[in-house]
Amino acid sequence: MTATLEQTLAALADPSRRRAIDLLCEGPLTAGELAREIGLTPAALSRHLRVLKGVGMIAEVPLYSDARLRAYALRPQPMATLKTWLLQNEARWMQQMDALSRSAQSV
Image (cartoon, one colour):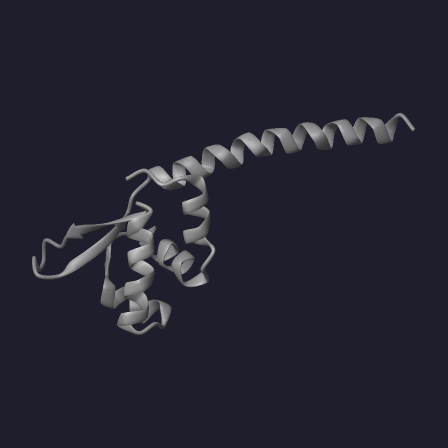
């Protein structure tokens, strides 16, 4: 599934989900590891993982040390879409700031 920009932004609106993303930047983690690091109950974390999986930001990956455990890892596409949008808007913002700066200098 490819998340829309709106879905990605909505998923990132929650601080616990952003913290999970930050932690997963270091590498795959189990749900238990994420829950401990974030300070959530397993049930609460499960709801956040469901949202992140639903928009395609994370995926379950096998753990080579124990096939019974589920680990989670980042998927790049939703963040790549967000990054593209931010870069496009940054260029527009910079153009507007340059225009404002030029008009202020001419006054």
